[in-house]
Image 1 (cartoon, rainbow, N blue to C red):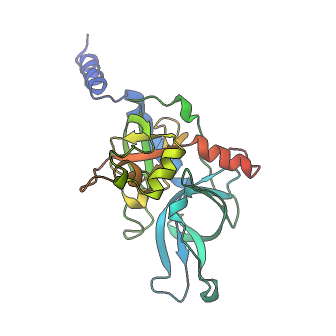
Image 2 (image 1 turned 90 degrees about the vertical axis):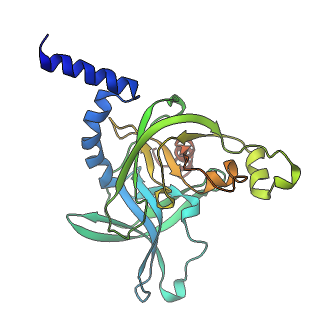
Image 3 (image 1 turned 60 degrees about the vertical axis):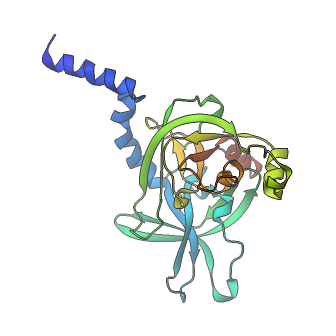
Length: 259
């Protein structure tokens, strides 16, 4: 056996012990190149405001290239149309910052998902997978804007395993610990993906995808889920969560769009 072959086998063994696959590490750089073409920042734009662009979260292009998925809580409560404020997405292409106006056309508040329609020609899209096939221990990646647009429109990628597939809300031990939001989520239970990677508030709406293929299996959610699962913690953990993509598929079908 050659030295190169021996070292290659040892490296593979180490990666397996770390829970990583050789193919995932090899394919991820190419996957990121393609995924980033579909990543947008979601926010509002008002030309007379300083700054004119306000970042609220991340989104990604799906369906026919004219629609964007994000978290419902990323959307503003209202738009000041009298001052020409608009909902918008922001992205970089050919080295230049771009802006497109957007309109919210469907919202699923139970699963914190929103679907936007954007102006302009179609953008590259991400394919949606089957979240029911996700298994604990599998490695996935997510790309978005963890600290907003402060450092420019340069999406950042993180990776981690699905450490648990867990209920959206944990029942409180005492009645006085319950609040309306928690009660509502306990009455409409579903499971979410718990990740061992750290996401930040700006990551809300980022796609969680397979590192080899870029196929999306979830939507990163930093705020909505934590309110339910960690509402009793005085010091919230760094655990991150994602909403299974099956609920986004249903939202797309409700608008007669092919998911």
